[in-house]
Length: 327
Image (cartoon, rainbow, N blue to C red; front, side, top):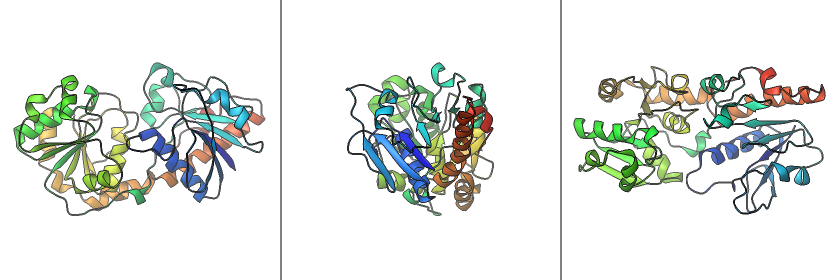
């Protein structure tokens, strides 16, 4: 199958970039599984096993769909968009949505969500879990003496203020990655951050990020919103690191009792902090290797591609719906 991805991000992404990393891991896995993969992306992009075609657009232009037809290989079987589409291509196509905006959650033909809960809230059924490449992470059975918050500190919905309150009240060492102390002016928690055992790591990526995750006793993610997926959860688990989070969005699909704690209150989180030693790091890693890798993601998308191609050939436009659920 000749798969064409449309990425408005240069690949591989430098620094933080959840969606671009998913696109990169997906294309890489598809090439490894024997598919022919082309990526339409900004100049300078590369991906192992894939042919990258440079697409130059006006500065600030986020919608690449108007440029697809002029760059599309003539033998493409399917086009996979990772952002909104204003101009459909002249061939079968699908779109993966990653967010919670009204536009993204609107049920439309060819749309694939990233968790069962995400699909339900969008009025659809088709979903594929975001998969990670385990080779980019480090498994550690023995942990260092710190807990980790790793998300965008500047977003109140990520709950850094709760993690800081827990650290101050319980006296454990907390490393905060994904922003600086200055970011707390928007999210709250500044007072609780002013203790010796709280350290801000700023933005982290690559090897430094992998080591930070692998050494943590647990990832604390006290979210206040319906998380569509939560890539950092898979990254923690594959590293053998337990997850403490809230039962919202996709979290109940990812965090089972064997690998972490779903806490519906502040007191429940305090209790979970004291119980992280009960979690087996090997069980955490097995959770990801069982269904949350980029190889699983590539196989699951193949089913949706086949449904899209069949629907297009029959004159229909609802491959996402006809493909059904996929984990």
